[in-house]
Amino acid sequence: MIPSFTPVSDYAPANLDGANWSQLEPLYKGLVSRELHCKNCLERLLMDRSELDSVAAEAVSTLYINMTCHTEDKDKKQAYLDFITNVQPKLREIGFELDKKIVNSPFAKDLDPKRYEVLLRDLKTAVDIFRPENVPLETEISTMEQEYQSISGSMTVQFDGQERTLPQMGRYQEETDRAVRERAWRAVVDRRLQDREKLDELYDRLVRARHKLATNAGFANFRDYAFKMRRRFDYTPEDCHQFAKGVEQHVVPALRKAHEQRQKALGVPTLRPWDLAVDTHGRAPLTPFANGEDLFNKSLRLFERMDPSLGELFKSMRSGGCLDLDSRKGKAPGGYQATRDRQRMPFIFMNAAGLQRDVETMVHEAGHAFHSLLCRAENLLAYRSEVPIEFCEVASMSMELTSHPFLDEFYTPEQAQRAKRKHLEGIASILPWIATIDQFQHWVYLNPGHTADERTRAWNSLMDRFYPGVDFSGIENARDAMWQRQGHLYTSAFYYIEYGIAQLGAIQLYGNYKRDRAAAIRDYKKALTLGGSRPLPELFRAAGLDFDFSPSKIERTWKQVADDLAALPA
Image (cartoon, rainbow, N blue to C red; front, side, top):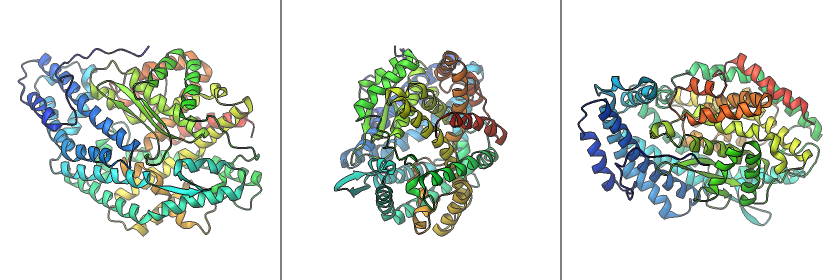
């Protein structure tokens, strides 16, 4: 059964259009002008505001979903741009007024500290960093972020007589014919490089705007502003550098060894970028599903076997416009889960092309959907929608690992072993990549006046550090621009280290799962019901995990992955 919820506020009319400021404005102004006489009055304000915010949040979420599903639809694109240009700035301004009203209320001290400490902490931070002059700047940044989506979503190539999206080209990297892999890889890279200068210039503009955002708020650089903005109360930039150090010490050697073994198995003089996904035994690519519907049905059976209640949650997404899974022209790249906040129902966006990585994406985004559904009864929007990303990704990455015993829904036993190895080897690749992207952002925003050439040199120094054993001779320009394919750099600045922290948590949870499946899933679901109502370390503890990503913890955690890999056929 989907967890039910009972709204405790009827302040927002059922037919309220959350994309229409003329309808929202009087209701928000009513909250700002409301007189407060006691603690109960303040709690009522919090509930009424939460419901009204849910309406506006669902409106922009729906507009974003429509825009990313149809990037070539000018009306859908314009509707999203109209919101971020005309409505979102006003929401930020009046939101600041409400934040101030709440944190400065004499009754705030009377609120239940366990219930409201996280909310009040976050609101105080929002008040501290808000600057009216940043509102138009944030709108400008949002417009540039959408520009990246449009550029990326329009990228297609002609290959083997058909126009194909870049996600659809991914399957050719698993072809056993090396010439086909190289030809496909070069086709994709050539297409990306056509927009390299445009994306360089767009990133320059974003860096300048974000630096201005930070200095307006009294910060020396955007890095320090972003840590405050992202509510990183429980770790510091130095902790991120220690994460990178731990990955370099304990994971990069494993990646280097895996690349050496791959080169030897393939019998090639050097390992090239188009040699990284093919099966080293010459077996045909894994083909786990035929289309999005097949992917959903097989995933449903997987979750029903993992835990019947998770199966019920996943099944509930079959209807209600909760899915867009297949790749097609004009669709933004990547995958995500979004929540329609008033109805409190999730939406999964994917570009499924029939690959094993699509299975991983499906169960990953399902984990986010489970999180959304399991904290559905929480009436404070902030605790549903502002869960620390570091824990949100535990919810999703854990499902990638706990799905391993059930991959026979997609494969024969031998193929399932291949898929498990592929996923675990992928962790050996993704942790260094996360360190690379995170350290790159530290450099970018601590050196905001850098040139494109300086940025390229900084990028390549990180590639030398974290990406060993791959030969880019003659195709150095592809290596130089690899960072442009990581959309987070454009659309979610400083959002990526979260994946590394969460991956370590997910590995821990899988270790617990192998020891006691029922207890691990029970703790997983219990922690997800908390939403964002507790500080980040407490959320980890609720799931039975340590909040620790030091080099020593990485060493111990990585050993679990290494042991699992050693137990699987090569």
